[in-house]
Image (cartoon, rainbow, N blue to C red; front, side, top):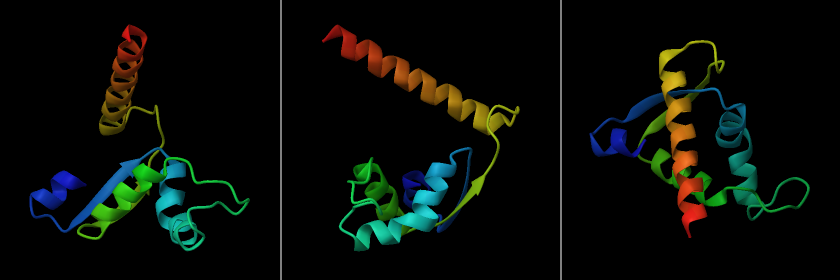
Length: 98
């Protein structure tokens, strides 16, 4: 999203297998902000920092989130999954070294 904004794009479609992300951004975010970042059960919203960052960039770029099924051979989704696994592996390896 930041790259789209920084390259002058004003609209973007993000295909993701994360229904949680889609629901968070399209359904729950407005209520969470109005409720002081508390869920309907009064708990703190998890990953608030990430959601706020995404929401901040959406002020500059119109973003449509589209659900795709994971692990069904969609090239971009498979590559994103591989990058996420590699990032998690590096994070955990770095954490073990400390």
